[in-house]
Image 1: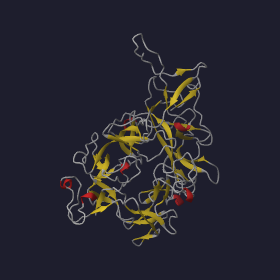
Image 2: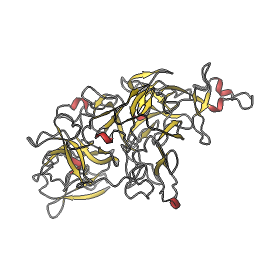
Image 3: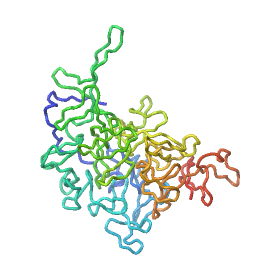
Image 4: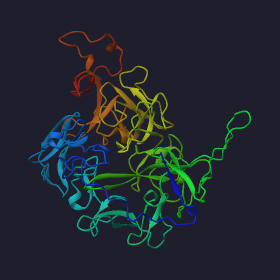
Length: 520
């Protein structure tokens, strides 16, 4: 944490945008110049690599590749022709020639692959290499779609949502970056909750974290000392008044509660604590991917385990999470195009270090899930959410209880988000999507952090790059008899130990010690 000083007139001086938001750094993770050493302070694998990339943890400095660099899954040189795509597991990639037709049907621009004999666009986890970029659009499932709020757009190109405008925010021609933003030129007070109207040439709404004095912050409690019995006197937790009449408050990182401010920058919370949630706002740009920054969002009234919607329109308090909660997007999108999910408790997903435990923390039977697969370049705080832990091979925890009224599935996924499949069956009780599949059913969401698409002990995955994703049962490769020998005795009663008749347990990862397999 760090301490900042706020002028005595902060309550009466309107927020002023700090010139312009800082521009994103140049492409690094699989961008046009991925062989360069990644510039600080952006961590190379922050936010997760593209679905055609792997995170090279060790790097190769002789080849100019820094540690934790996203590189092509098809090798350092990538593909001479075609696009690198994951074929199966977490390490098997191949070069695929883009398709112009699928099943004798012509594909639209941006649809460069055949998936289950249907034309499909391709999108990476970071936004770079989205095949719809050439059309000024973003890949939505199989087809290209117009940009949404805070996504890069082309002025004069595909339209932004109704009530929004495409405005240049970063840089200057020919390298400017335009984003879809809510238009506030006719009414500066029309911005959504947690946003403010930036005047000048923008006349559009931006998250309050981008404005001067808009950092996530808390009061520093006043120290009233101790009474005659040595008991510390309770304090009001208010601002510290400095000799010059200014005020002192402390910035806090994501995952913490924070002071809610009004449109003019004045703190509206009562002394003692902040009601807001310090979370990420982020822009998506084609040449960089997800560009996150901290911002304080006023709380709603939705409680732990209740449904939420990432719709910050004024008046939607009932579907916005309350203090200390984050909306984990596990429910797809509503009819208005907003992400839906479940309110989960926030935590600090940054790895703990010797002598330092990351705070806020989760319970002893929970894990702090790196929901956005982000790495803090300052090694301080990463916004996470608490999920119950489980193990698909455990008789005690292979089945997960409901979270409120919402069913959850035990998915063998790692909380840090670095592995798409855990190695030993350890997993998370992930809230299910609205519709979940059984073994063999098609499923539309392969990322478990976006909601479990299948039932307990199953993963949503595809066998090859051209096959549709289906629900696949997991199995324990250590329960396969070696050289005709009998499997361990525990396999007779262990959940998900073996596969049903007609299926074989096949290794899902070549990593030493990995025991999770697929029933194929």
